[in-house]
Length: 213
Image 1: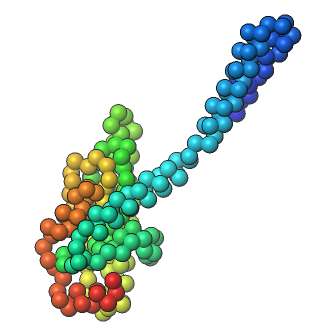
Image 2: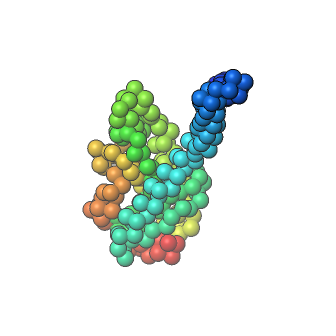
């Protein structure tokens, strides 16, 4: 890329030099315009946001959208956001009548998400051959949920199941799917899904968790 940049700039300088030497105003203007345009184009290109920063930004937006949905659950539910766990950062922990849930938000608007036995697959709408598969996500989610369950047992003395959930913002035709011990839920449907689950927490479990969350 640097070589191309040097060639383009050199051509601009050559045209401008020819214009000055021959007195040809058109050649000078063409050279000056070309050189300036390439400088501006490459400068703006160099200032483009790196991919990892863009992914982080989309992830942060997904967390915000999930948080807005969880805030609508009602007084019987308790929600904590952005917690540090043994397996890294935890986006959301939700405690309610249906149990304890560990949620990870994903913003995958660049394609259509499907779930297979090994995890989510995102397929770009206009380039099916460029699909990517996040095979490590299910194991990470199960590990984080198990770690959270062990932490709760140590703190309140009760054995409680923690359900790992991936909240998907983007096109997810499955809407709600459970594969390999992990539940995948469409972002706009997560509140309705949680409220529709059967009640599992006993009054004793709920009281113990109330002291923690």
